[in-house]
Image (cartoon, rainbow, N blue to C red; front, top):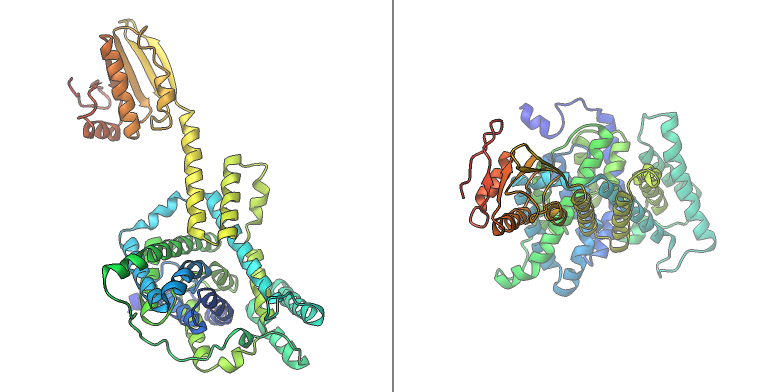
Length: 509
């Protein structure tokens, strides 16, 4: 019984009031985003709402991070929009199902550990770029239905209501934390607009949210290799974008709550949610950093808040559409702007004169790519590649060789630093083959043979010494280096000295 209660976060200490009120706040904030993302993807508005419900309920129950919110996202929308335009919504549903299967496999194969390869500057850049996107997306609320900027009274009304929303969210926690500030702000603006009869844009002006339970629907696409060739590239990108955004969001929530979630468990949950979303007329999605931060900042820490948010969203769709469609967009806009302000890592701006220039470059590049292309997967990938290249370059310059000749006339080269593709050239420059004595020992006690390039460098070095009739030995190889050399023994033939401390096996010429 305890195992099943734990699925809902009921075996941990839970503040039920915070969980319920936070979930209600998130449900209200999910509506305009889900509608907007569905429209961006070229799908019906209800498709986004159905995705938000299914993604939210499944990941809240099965996910690896209590308190994190998932739903329809812009990251997924910008990937599938091209497919929706060229092949229609049926292919989108099939793509989402396949993306879910890929994510489940990633979780089962425990690929969540790959997030360890994401450097902190990349996370800073990702978060800052996402904060800018959230803020910029709210500027559309300052335009009319024709796409022109509001002017005069409508503009001042919108700005005034947005400002009041932000003021309530900022000020209320300083006075009391009895109720979530975001929910209070929404209700205050709703009351002001209703009492004064203010004419301003509402949720209903975007699209109707009236509907029923998500209908089960198998994608009507041909089951053949041609269909697979069409949807697989999109599915792979959706799966990658979804996992990257979800796992980065998980890490951010971990830092805020000072707890630890499970990346692999979250990957399986995201995959299951996407698989079911595709079967129930949804567009797919992933974790939402903005909604997750709303939830956490409102005091939620357990799975219950996400379940409440998803269930209340379905209730709004089925029974409360008439009321929810009257909510002023200004309240939700102000809420999302405050989320953007809270999301941005302001501390990262202080690092410009203190951190290495390479880290600053990575952070800025990831931010720019995220903002310009709205492609979080590409942004993170570029950041990781740049960081890896910088790391390789720095380590390539650190290889050193201490040289001396012992009493027996044997010359020793004590190598410091890793031997890999980046340091091979510097390594070769350390040796004086023609002027060295007849016997040479290369000591790897402070070094490592890392890759194929390093093995080839050792092979070439052996050949250079053998050509002039001299012997070369390797000493103090670590166990992993010995295995690497043994696996490559068909292309390299060197002497490895027996060492009494390391018990190194001898490879005879």
